[in-house]
Length: 139
Image 1 (cartoon, rainbow, N blue to C red):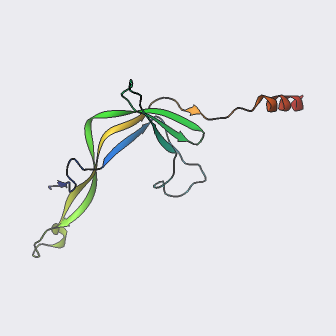
Image 2: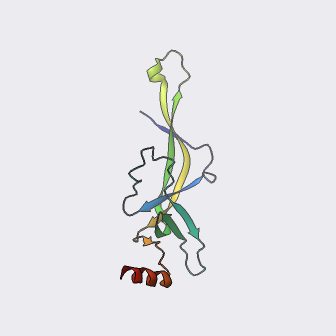
Image 3: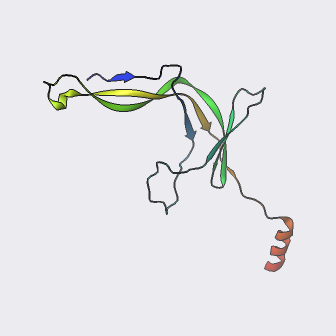
């Protein structure tokens, strides 16, 4: 079976996508019972790279955790594809054989954002005045 790959946008104008690579598992809360598609996981921000550092820095905040990552160029680009069924023009053929499969290119992935370090906890400390009050009440 022949599968055709078609790109209607041209090589230079294909949308640029990126892969986010995390170490570990991202799990929704136990109370969540819906579809994971469209679920808000966290906030991804890019920080401007300095003139001395060629790699762009990224932060990903998930709940009370913040991850620091970098943008890495892939050795070989990846394509993002969408399946389409294309019917052939002949009316004599049976309907089962008339449908062919075509893959449409909807994006190109040339970079990944890699978060390889352990997350930093975003827990604020109690002010020293409140700490002393809590310790005095405990005694």
